[in-house]
Length: 328
Image (cartoon, rainbow, N blue to C red; front, side):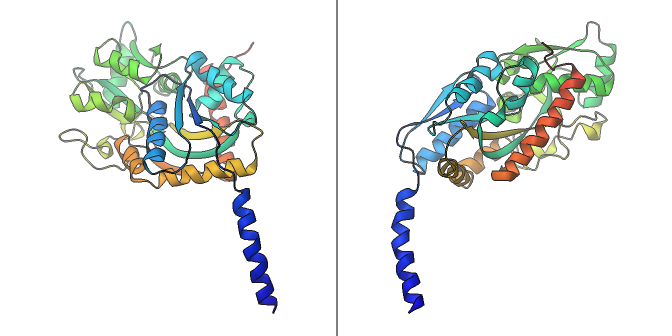
């Protein structure tokens, strides 16, 4: 009799639970704090395509690029959108770097962490016409170059700039860093030999690598990338050695993830955690990871918060050493 009663109660509760499950009621806006064409934009559009192709939500996905103020415009937009469950923002290390370097009155703790989807590797790239074949070659040239060799990357006091300065400090050399409005422009400048190197992500440089315009010297990762499929006629991502293995003791990887505005409900947050988990299981996402040599790393809940807390402190330490922390 008790079993029958429990079954009846359970059957009555199921429709109630289903009725209470939250779903978006209007188009979902994903804000990208960078220009179109960069790695963050590519990720957002891959997510958009995977969701639409696999019918993972009923509402359309809209991508909005807001690159002004080194991503600060996008972060302030999300901060001001507290309680709106139809907005998201793609995230990278800029989620802490921009506030730390500009005193922008915003923090990732003002937002709702949804999920980290992957980590992105940075690579030291040079023009293929240059005589450098290893990181050791590049550093040796930097030690005697007059004027100093020039590196370029996405903005000032951002990830690329931080790697460049950390590389200077680790190798005891002088390098001039030139900021651009994204990884795409930095790639164009390198292919045109206007700079000597950049620290682009694989997604931002793969086309020029395939074309033969640029070549990778080393990856700023603790271990080589795992993807063994050939990108060029004779090289795969896994063939790029780590910078550490070539005597340049610098490692750096960047999170790629998603946040919502603050003050959303747990049910709304849970909806997107589940959505992005399903996105990472699609063939489209897996192909995107391999094409762009991303490190799969899905984290949500406390695991994501723990990562963010530790990663923010790591960036604060590196930025303090580099002189990037805003003082007024």
